[in-house]
Image 1 (cartoon, rainbow, N blue to C red):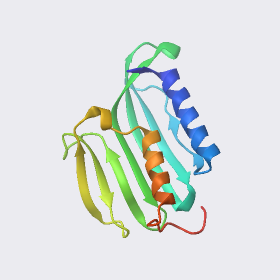
Image 2: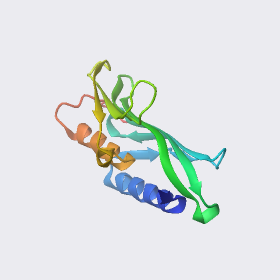
Image 3: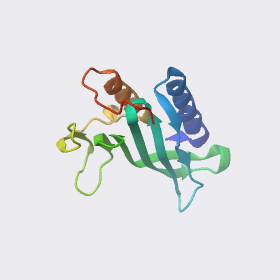
Image 4: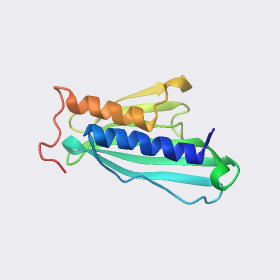
Length: 150
């Protein structure tokens, strides 16, 4: 559980660091207004090499209002893809077909090659972890993203 203002502050700091680092081109992630006891966090993060990260996250309001609002992540999906090629990897919270957090990995054609469950809550990645993994991929010799920047 975390205060919403701290959550937003951390998000903004992490995004600013990745933009200053030069990997992230733009942060299109937005926070919805509270509705039905939840806040959604969603949007696209554009990165070099045609990489994009689609964020779809649901925060449950646990207590408080305004500056004292406390939230907890209850669902998330971080999908990393290459424009014109398809998915590279996607982290998801537990849902219908999986009872644990998990990561889907795709080959260079965008075909699913594995789904690995994450049993240890401490190993569930943050959005910053996912961006760092995408950046590692971008700088790896195996990366074959767009040569043109978006």
